Image (cartoon, rainbow, N blue to C red):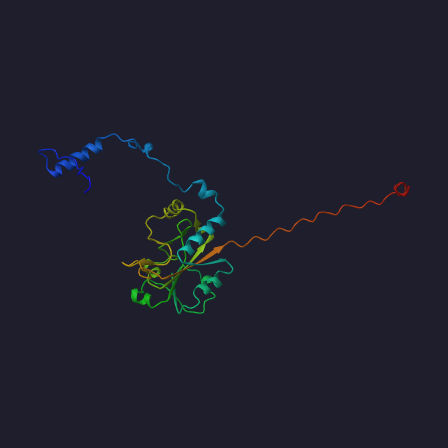
Length: 260
C-alpha cells in the first residue's frame, strides 16, 4: 500500500463547480504579478531584432555557410556557383528531368543551358497538369540561414503556390544578396509588401506516419535543389616587389683599407 492522499482543494459550500472555477480565476487575475504590463514601455524588448549586431555584422560568407549547412541537414542539394556559371548549375540540378515549369519572371539566362522544354506558367495549369511535370524552377525572395528556410513571394519570380507544391522536384535559385541570418530580418524584408502571398520552404516535403516511418513528398516536392549564386572570388592582389638594394661601388680608398 502507498501513503498517497488526495490533495484536491475543498469545495466552497453553496457554489457550483462553474462558480468555483470562475471565482478562482478572478482571484488569480487580481493577484499582483511582477511581470505585469500596464504601459507600452513596460513590454520587454529582449527578443531578437532585425538590427541586432549579430545580424548586421556577421560576415556574409559565413551567413551563406550556415544556410548551406541547414539546407543539407534537411537533405536538400545545394549547388554553390557564380552568376556566370548559374545556367550550368541549373542544368545540373535538372539533369534527369523530362520537363520543367517556371514562373514568367524567371530570367532566360537561368534556362540557357537546358536541353529540355521549359513551360512558362500562365496560371491555367491545374493540379493534374502540374503533376505530369517533373520539376519547377523558381526564384527566391529571402533565404533565412539559421532556419534553412526559403521564402518565395507570389510574384512573377516566385510563382503561384501550386507550382511549387505539385511537381516532384523544386529547384530554387538564391542570390547572395537575398540571404539573411535570422527570421527578424526576413520579416522586415517581407513587411515591404505584407499583402502578398508568401510560401516558406524548409527542405523537401517530409512527414511521418503513425509508426514514425519517414515519408517524403506527401505535402510537396520530394526533392529540393538550391542554386546559390555567390560573388565572384576576388583575385589576389599582386605582391609589390621590393626594389633590390643598390650595390655601391667601393672607392679606391675603401679597397686599400680592405687590402690592408
